[in-house]
View 1 (cartoon, rainbow, N blue to C red):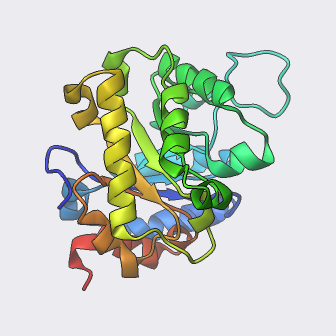
View 2: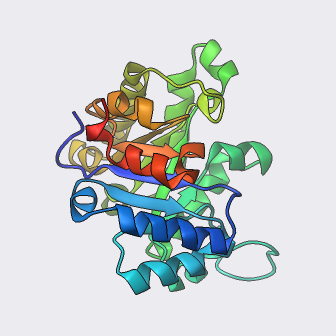
Amino acid sequence: MTNEKRQPVMAGNWKMNMNHLEAIGYLNKMAFSLIDADYARTEVAIFPPFTDIRSVQTVIDADHLSIVYGAQDISAHDSGAYTGEISGSMLKKLRVKYALIGHSERRAYHHETDESVNAKVKAAIKNDLVPMIAVGETLDIKQAGNAVEHTLSQVQAALKDVRSNYVGELVIAYEPVWAIGTGEVATPQDAQDMSMAIRQKVAKLYSQDVAEKVRILYGGSVKAGNVKSIMEQPDVDGALIGGAALDPDEFLRIIRWPDQP
């Protein structure tokens, strides 16, 4: 089972879906469904588009919800002539907790590099945001037998020059790219093996104590029907959920993963 020392986190990444009115409706439905026992067992996090964050903040504050929220990206820059980018200080003013950094779609479609991911990690930390760092391999890398080496190199690059006192608080999301939105899913043992390798890498870079604090999520076609077997792995501390998180009923079932058959 998941390590009891680390509270699991279920993170719903909405990607480019839902306008701010739809976000309000979604949160209202979640507010009526979630109970104290859900929050005590699992941290519930959502990652709406930038245009929804203010509305999300308003609903959560007004209803005193324990749901936390994050940004899908963060600029490496503090301010300036960077059209379309959103700085960490702007997100901090909206009381955002997490910044999702290095998602495979950002790496693929926006050509983000290990260096830019590292810069964004530092920008998040500078502004008291918790980095949620996404790492993982493509199908070609997997078929070549280099999945572990590739993924661990991403972890090391993302954490370059990051001090140990910050590392224990961050989250690493392992997302095999070949399993995102494809219906394919790594086996629970695959998720465990990579999560364990990531934890061992953090221990090597810092210490075992730091590594034991880091929460490691699995992302890639997670649904209510497969989440329990994934969450039963000792080094998997939650999930980064895409499409299934757009349905509040399905997301609720995932959040209540111990109740799944």
